[in-house]
Image 1: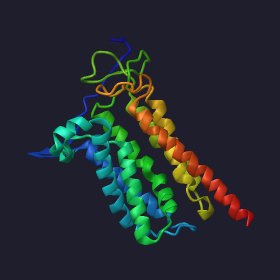
Image 2: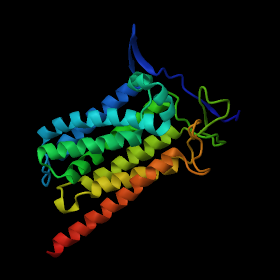
Image 3: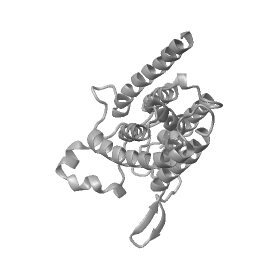
Image 4: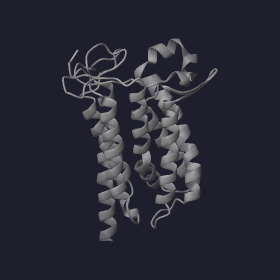
Length: 271
């Protein structure tokens, strides 16, 4: 073991245990992300240029919550352990045992946003832009919960901040959960909040959502270089992780939305 390795803090994944009832940090991360994003979004849509009202954001929270939970769970089942859950279908419902996929949750939220936009008569790109600006809040808390749970650790490293994680062997590893919290959470949040400041220009619809997709895809693909690949998957095709593979469509869609927002704005200005 490296002499400079940092021992992992003795975190308890369970905050409160009352008999069979337990409150876990991971559950609180989801709650904090959803509630924090909800309040930020209500303030943002009160600015000029937004069709959506603060009252409609209350309804959007319900749609987004369902999208995150259902999409995240199904994504984990289909992307990471399809054969196991095919043999044990009832285990799909055991969400209290953990197992959520961000990419699956993203698909779930996109579907939920589309359904919400259609039911309320709001442009879907506007709803997507709004949700994109606050999604990094949930990502930040989620990655901190991953760190507290001592899961999704990084690859071995000799850097002075390498950390020895429980159940990960004696070698110090990258605290990749904190890398993701900093990039996908803090950095991406700052970029999107700066872009969304002031009044909204409807001609830029899709730009915030595209920036989020592009930014997350790039950040995730980068951090995967330091994150230990899933043991049962390894490197797909010998050179790419599942996280990087799933991030590629996000990067491409993000670029398309950004290009479309500039093209659409240019046509409106010209007319």
